Length: 353
Ligand code: SF4
Image 1: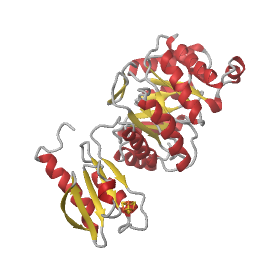
Image 2: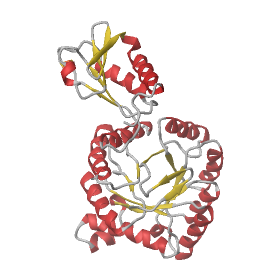
Image 3: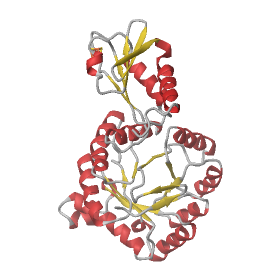
Image 4: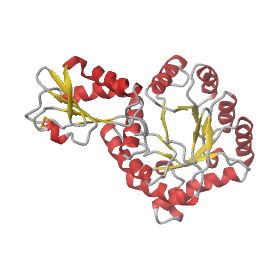
């Protein structure tokens, strides 16, 4: 089992729940919009937000951003040790930097000292896209090259007595990401951050991440996760939770399933399922809710759901454990389900599920 690492108010590793993170795509110097995006990410369930810190002005912006946000912040830094130290002094909760890129050992020591003084962990690792050529020459297997490159980063920090480390090995290739994380999990007990890097546009990123990250999490590998999707980062958070839920690593969250629709469909299933998901997002219990397009085949198809709603021409019929509960108008279905489940939770139903 991995070691516990504290990142601001959250803990990762040591069997803690897997933390979902994302990254802003605003300019960090644009303090207003960056704070807005961080708050939107937090609202969507993001537990840690990474920001690019590329010059001194960004480290100044971090102070203000930190003072106006609650979620743990991670400073993403390349090459310049001074930016890492300044970010730590600005109050960030974690730094992502590779000691191999910093240069002289004394610079690595400076960063390690600041991080130790502020109890800030450092995330190191390797990315197949930017891996040093020497590893690719030394190791025939690209995955071995990626893993050993990351392990050298870890060792460099350990050589300056720094142990508060998170490690990541990433590739834009899902299979390489999967194999590299399986390998590195056998070599280190530092917590592992999972991600398929530069995964692509929405559908490609979702498929790659579901395959690699879902598989790893199912195997018990990984402590934090970021789904890398080109564009709006808010979507990364909901995809991460869907993956966690699908591999049974998310407790107290309702799973909403929906039929694929066909010629029998009586209601807009996709729209309704989205409404139901949104309404039930904050309800904390382990239930499966099915949104089905018709009653005729739906009852059989939704048999393993705890609660199901079947579309009719005028609205929906709600069933619980195969028993009909009632008819609801179309625009009231999502709220009715929420009220019904919350009411039963208050009455002690669905406990210990
Ligand atoms: S539940 Fe009804 S509408 Fe949905 S796929 Fe099955 S038969 Fe078609």
